Length: 453
Image (cartoon, rainbow, N blue to C red; front, side, top):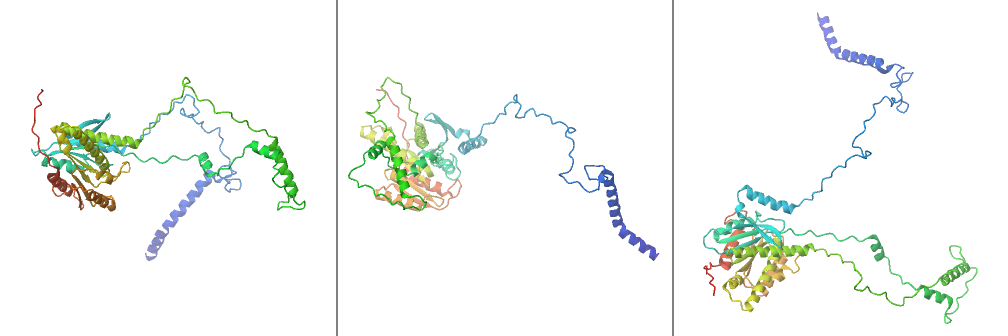
């Protein structure tokens, strides 16, 4: 029994090796039946060795199925051209404002949306009427570049909080600032002409006269020695003869005719080609759009009875707000000098104030911001937060320029990082609300009936 059990154990141990050996034998037998003999040219030669790939006999191409012609192949003359879809350039500015309109529609706030038109272009405005019962005036809010009329950091808290303190707010859509275009590339010909030094051209007639009549004052050229040879093996005598031939060739060439006068100018009867139309400068068009939209926003507030106007400009909008208020104050001074003493005109002249929040000097403005502000004589609040990217030197210089001009209504306040809440914890809302109450609060005018004389 012990010997039998030991034999069984040895057989069990050797069973995997026996199975592997059997599979190898079956695989070898299968290979001999399919391609191991010498009659198959594709798998081996008469000696049983494998055939190299270069000497292998390829199957007859006639037996291969013929390739079907593609009805849409380029060789087909009747092939219809594939319709290419137009290339769509992304417009992040339009997408940003369209997303805001969808947000208002989703939250059932379409009543805040008003449509304004300036220079035949339509834009939106977000209007909120005062809810205190004691109207103080109207606030026009200008968002920064790359934002929209309900930007959550500064614009939205102001436009939704100030109505509770008697201020009617209007936030308008502003156009996107144009992107700076790269300079035109100089052509190769212009670059070569600019890089090549200019040479003084001598008229050929002068060369011919000099060659035909040599000057007597010039001493005769010394005959070079016949045995003088340069580094290239050419003697001086050969050089002299060659130069003489060139001079004789230039002397034989006729001179160009001289002009007796300028060609006649075209008369008025002759048709003239129209000059190409001048391209509109995108920067100038952008400045005009900004002024038109600010003017339309203030006019909309005036039509609703808001004569005490405060403009809040954020970031890059500071230049355009200051420029508009400068033009408005000049027009008011002109009308006052001309004798316009109407109560409404006087109210419009007095009801102007400006608030700047993290103001930036716009590179497209023809006049720097500091030079614009020193010319304004109206209540002005300059808020600077820790998130402002304006250089510290620019803000300090602005405050110094205002003190130098004795602008006592100017006030610059630095505030720490602000919260995004819509209550008194928002430092920007709290500062703006307190400053408006002290420096720009208006009074409600009684309704007066206009009687005809």
